[in-house]
Image 1 (cartoon, rainbow, N blue to C red):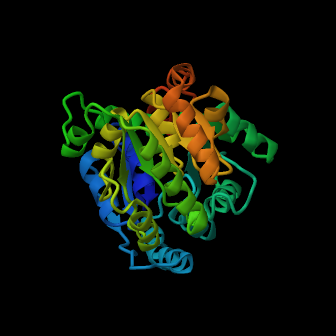
Image 2: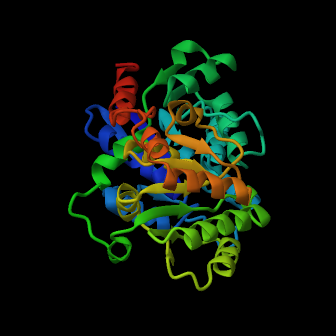
Amino acid sequence: MKHIMVVFGTRPEAIKMCPLVKELKTRKNVRISVCVTGQHRTMLDQVLEVFDVAPDHDLCIMKENQTLFEITINILNAIRQILQNERPDMVLVHGDTTTTFATALACFYLQIPIGHVEAGLRTYKIHSPYPEEFNRQAVGIIAKYHFAPTEQARQNLLKEGKPADQIYVTGNTAIDALKTTIQKDYYHKELDWASGSRLILLTAHRRENMGTPMQQMFCAIKRIIAETPDVKVIYPIHLNPLVRQIAYAVFNGEERIHIIEPLDVLDFHNFLARSYLVLTDSGGIQEEAPSLGKPVLVMRDTTERPEGIAAGTLRLVGTEEENIYLSVKKLLSNNEEYDQMSQASNPYGDGFASKRIADILMGDGE
């Protein structure tokens, strides 16, 4: 019987890998085991609970104020014994996290094949996003199977010399996750507070945006609030203390900006579905929001998801205050601009990526 191990460690990975785990567990003649590194802890556990996925192995590596050095070293040390004992026929990893990179490296050392879910995203700027761009490219060198979410991602991999018969365009499993999480009768007191207003859902946490860039982001939002009485902002704030320090300093006293604790995946997706537009420096939200018809302004200078830009669902607005301010103002004041973005076709899939990946894996060697 074939043994496939699925490894992930952060909240975004879990959101995108749990639908695949659930799909694989419906298949015959295969053993599926799940290993979580715990790179995130509370936020990871919330996702596992929503999708009813129980890990077979938990490395529990998370420490307060952990560095990239510590995450990488601790994962390598902890996962080695599990891989040696289990000897899976394949390990599936996702995207661009340090968990993904360290796991792929461990598998390379042990000559265990890697399947890379959400492969082929590129900015070709090694420090943007950091360290994610490096992680993706490094895993791409190691992987046997490349499950690319879009044709553009496939083309990136082909240009890098990856064998065409090892690349599969599947769509993105993030879209699959929405089938589980979105609820018509969903209620939350924060959404009740925002009722009757145009809700901007804000997320901001990237390492490269710490300091002045993040301060400028928040100052732009503060200006929008001051000028637009029917707009409210909900910001599920990241756990990083530096993010919190900047946010509370800028937003202190703003009654129409609610800073709340991080939301679990079910809550966040339903907040997303009920928002008017999204301001983010995140990656996954660039895929999720277009599926729900929500315009996304990406507060970064680069994106590894150019398909959304080309389709018109995303717009890169950088991190400078004036550009963010003007971009949000245009969407709030120009219905035609808003409709063009909100009604653009979602380029990231149809919600059946997990099924396609499982079909490919089960067809191999059977």
